[in-house]
Length: 108
Image (tube, rainbow, N blue to C red; front, top):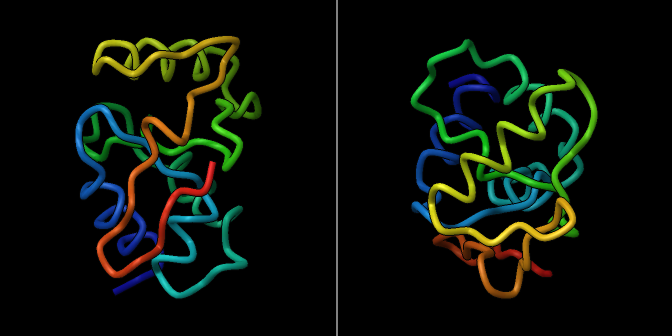
């Protein structure tokens, strides 16, 4: 399975109302130095996808501001619709961070 498909499969396991960092997704896939590739994979998703890309943030809990200028606002709206509190474009990782099965965790 390609790295992108593995990213998509893992991101689909993040439950509603929880988030993970790009680096933590990469680490859970056994590639701890591939955080940017996780970001590139999620940015390449087509519109209307069922992969919850919006649940992946910077490890600090901040919404990434690169790429499509409308994406951060969309991401914030999708997170808030799931009950995730976003303050100053940041999510409290200690409250909303997801611990992946197998031990790769969010460290806020």
